[in-house]
Each structure stands twice: as structure tokens, then as C-alpha cells.
Image (tube, rainbow, N blue to C red; front, side):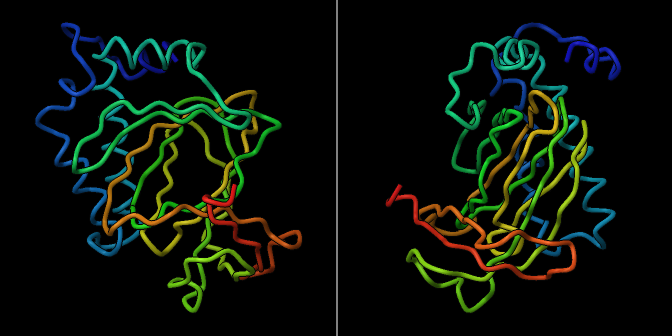
Length: 223
């Protein structure tokens, strides 16, 4: 990770907190996320802006000793669950930014982020991403059961690649690290009142030819 900082020719200024390092630009970062539902001229422009802002955020956050320590130690000091490790770096009423670490051999199951939009960028390692939308007739349901998902994206993410999710389109995603560890920087902002998160377990293997797949949804309150 230090090598990546050197490639970007960045040198940390006087020590700051994570919140101080984002002062003056945090609103702009959040605004770039708020436009992903159609505020850009095309997908290419959106990806370019999101990538630029996420790289800039990473550079600025390196001014924070806490962030720099976490990134350069590959989360060695983080408490992790069986599947992943996470740490919130900054949070306020506009949204939050944090780090996510996933590990090879323990994929993160498909899950949603109700009422929120977000952007993720790989900092280190590689991951395979699956992203889905809930078919419209199931979107108002707040119960566990069988649902149908529409595929939005399946691809490999490498350092500085970005992905995103909206409050409806592409809100369901899962990751699998393709290296020993994969570390991602993440922005998440609330758009609607946040409801309970759900986890999704496909009832069959998804093939490249399929546009939709059935999955068993389990509300987090039942896990």
C-alpha cells in the first residue's frame, strides 16, 4: 500500500484526523454519489468522476495517521468477523466513508443496503463482484422469502476500479476476494429511511446467459 501512495506522488502533510482531512471536499464527494441515478451524461462520465473522487479521497485520508495505519498494515489491527473486516473512518448526517476488507475463501454473501447509495473502490488486491437489482414486484416487500433478482454486473475488480449501488438499481451485491485479501474504500449515503438489511442466497448456480435468478431472502433480524 505504501508503494501505491508513492506512485501517486503523495506526501502526507501535518498530521490530521480523518474528518479534518476531508474538510472542504466532503460535500462534493457526497454530491458525486447523489448523481449516480442519472445526474451524469453517460456511464463513462460517471465512472470517471467517481474514480477521480475516490482516488482523491484516498490521498487526502492518508493525512490521517489512523487511516494510514490501517491501510498500510492491511487491517492487521482490525477486528474481523468470519467473512470480513470493516472500519468507519468518518460519518455525519450526509453519509459515511470507511474501509472494507474481505478475505480469500470466505466470500461475502449477497446483501443489500436499503435506502442508500454508495461507491466502492479497490485499494489493494482483487475481488470478484456480483451486483443485482430486486425485481420491481418484490421491492416493497419487507419479509423473508423467495425473490427474483436481475443481474446488473459481474466482473473482476482490480486496484482503483470502482463499483456503485443505488437505492434500487444494483443495490444487492456480494464479493469474493481473488487474492489473499482485498481492501476497499467505501462511501455510503442515505437517500430514504433505512429499513432492515437482507441477505440473499441463490437457489441455483447463476450462469452468464441468465438475466435473472431466484434467491432466498432472509431479513437480518432473523439471523
